[in-house]
Length: 202
Image (cartoon, rainbow, N blue to C red):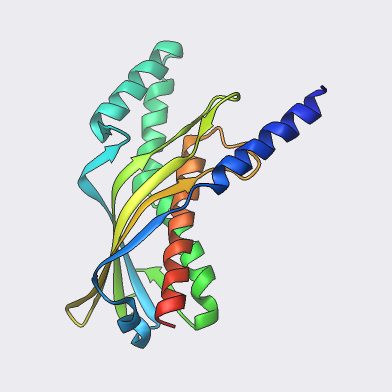
């Protein structure tokens, strides 16, 4: 069996396995249909103070990664942690959510963006769980993200949605970078929530 055939087979099984994953969406308060009156959203993004990275606290996870990478190559762990914070706090992950959320709802005349002071409604997203997953060639696991989405308008909470375990993985299996896999998890969440809003509210 040549390398091309091996790569094709691996990619097939990655896609097949990935197809079995789906995100869970649960409205925990209010009703999404009540959002039909709102067509513009101001996005607010935060991480829970007790954010979990897999089974570890964020502090434990970053410390282990930093030490492990620095032992293999001096300074690489420090650079990795700096990149983690840049992606997380700089908004790279949430940008993927926002892009897919807007793509899904554009046909309904809905827009969403940060610092949108004139918006009809505020959508507050709070991430409480992240699993970066892994890809080591012969074995892989998608990233996962879980968050709550709270819709607020005129000082009133309209609805709260729990979006848990959104999988993030490259379609072709070439997703060796953790930040890429996580970004895909955020994109999946934006698409999932957008579709449910389009279905129930618009």
